[in-house]
Length: 74
Image (cartoon, rainbow, N blue to C red; front, side):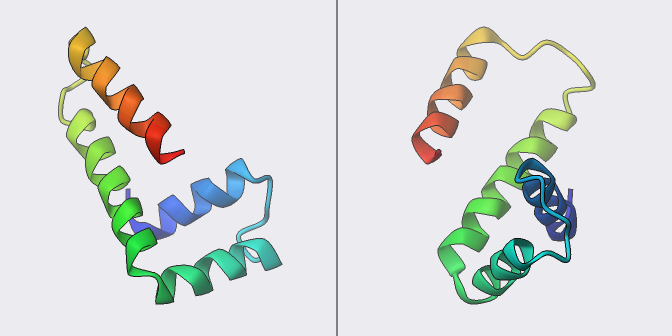
């Protein structure tokens, strides 16, 4: 998943058109906020890591740790 796909997903989750004011504001913020860019990069890396598992079941301990981390970030 690349940055554009992440942004599209965020906008979809917000029920916003990718060209809406909300999404434009997100794009602008991401251009100037290294912390948010790093956060999105981390999420993208996590998704890619799990994608490499070839649909295998994620061990419950790893799943629980990931859920805790994602809840802290929310």
